[in-house]
Image: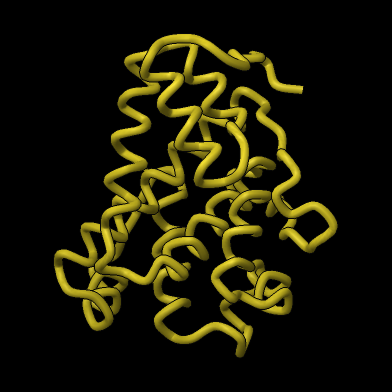
Amino acid sequence: MSRINGITRGGSLIARIVFFFSKRKVGKVTNPIRIMALNTPILWGYGQMELGQEKAKGVSHTIKLLADLRIATLVGCPFWIDIGSAGCRKLGVTEDKLQELSNYESSSLFSSKEKVVLRYADAMSSTPVVISDEMFNVLSEYFNESQIVELTSAIAWENYRSRFDHALKIESQGFSKGAFSPLPIKN
């Protein structure tokens, strides 16, 4: 159970608009949005960042979602593991690939480009963040500067979302019900 319940309906005009778009996009109002609706400026900023992330199309959505799911497993966030797994499946990521996410380095199911992105997500999710010149140079072999900005933003944004939700004990909402979802990675 979440530490904060959030609102179920009503709220500010911005909350009602965001609730509408959440239902339209994923079929229901998500618990993180219900909780953020308690603070309209935070909800507004969250919505703007989500919109910016959605409009950024320079990097494959599938690759960004794999990175998001990897981050959610590193942070241990049940909500983003759930919704990220469902999103990956919707984009055609196989169950086998989801099962290998924790072993991506040694798995033949991940392309070299995906492995570079997942390494980058791992490095950006550690404390302190250490991105070596070597790692950045390898990343630059696959992505131009605009794409690196997009990818870096997507990874940083998922760290925000997963850490926010995990801190408030926001649980999964059944997006992957009955299907495989990776487990949190124990450090």
